[in-house]
Length: 89
Image (tube, rainbow, N blue to C red):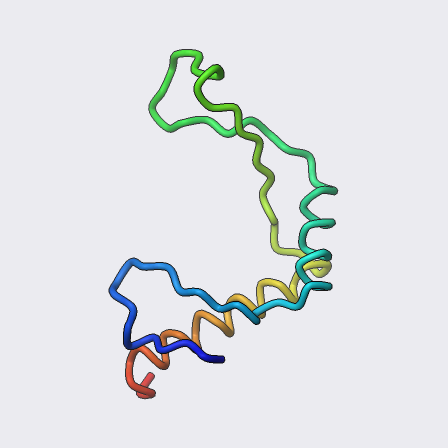
């Protein structure tokens, strides 16, 4: 696993280079590409700012097809938390 979670400050991002294989990353990307994107909006903004930010997003709703992805992310989160807490939780 190669990550020392004790070195992480609260709120920071953890890097886990081998969490997914290249084939799994390709599978995640293909699944995302199959979704219908929608316009991402900045919260609280009512004016038209499309010239500043044009972003499309799609939600990865939890379903059988990508349950493996959610399970992998959850296991990684739990492993990081366990390490951060000194193996006590």
